Image 1 (cartoon, rainbow, N blue to C red):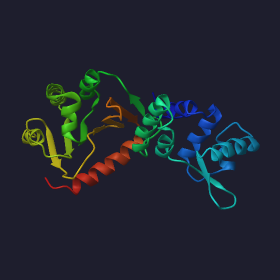
Image 2: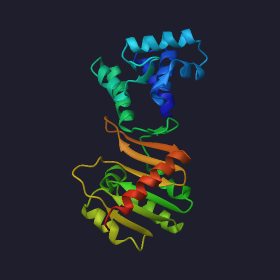
Image 3: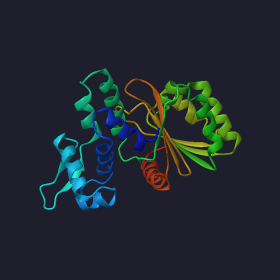
Image 4: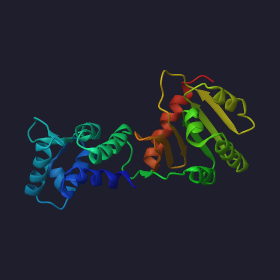
Length: 249
């Protein structure tokens, strides 16, 4: 399900009307937006927008500035999740998912969330989606923990067979990570390491206009966020290139 679909659905489960949830998402995407600007994004009258925004404000979902005319900012999803987390098991599960989304800031709302119990086939199909080059960024320990060594070997074999190069920025220096780097020439890859205290057990791939982030949610379930966006891909590419250029071999 797309993030843009899940957030309003989750908010209605937390007690908002469909109109309130939809307007919250618009404010979330446009912090500092005015009533007149909101009206242009909806089919509501000015009075209708005011009514919904006031209802959201009364419940703590949005905040108005002290300036005149007022502009509005959405309460962060993480704050909302914390507010509802203690209000029963069903609400706790919804709040947990909102908290997961809130950690992945600045992702396009057209992002898809894959929640399949078996992502092995999905993972092994990735090399066939690559046109020429792939960035691999994150924890190699996460790759081993999520998918296993045999699956990763097959992934690399398929990528190499297709002649696709890779640059890898790895946030750990485990023995398996070091062994991977020693095979760089054979496996058409160049690897650099970033050492830090604690890095999330997750990893990302970037190829073409596609960005994939593999992670476990708060319930331990493996998920993939897939974003197909030229703008987002360019932003991630710039980030990865900056990391690469500032990192020793």
